[in-house]
Length: 88
Image (cartoon, rainbow, N blue to C red; front, side):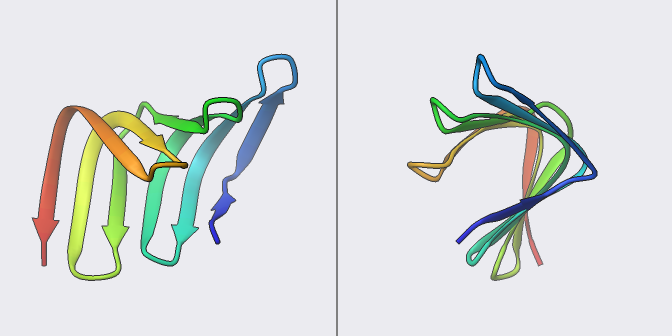
């Protein structure tokens, strides 16, 4: 299962959109996503990050991206701007 933590969070009941701010961490058995700002649409199941974000896999791989989206249903990401894959 996935868990999400952050310092602050807001929910728009009409649009069903969650906004998380400051030290946002999503933990999944296969990866961990860290960012400072994340918007999650409960209808589309799409998470949008607009600040530098790191995605760390259970191996030695890490992705660093300036912004992008993550589909929680398909587990597919789309990165915008600069992004890098780092293998340690």
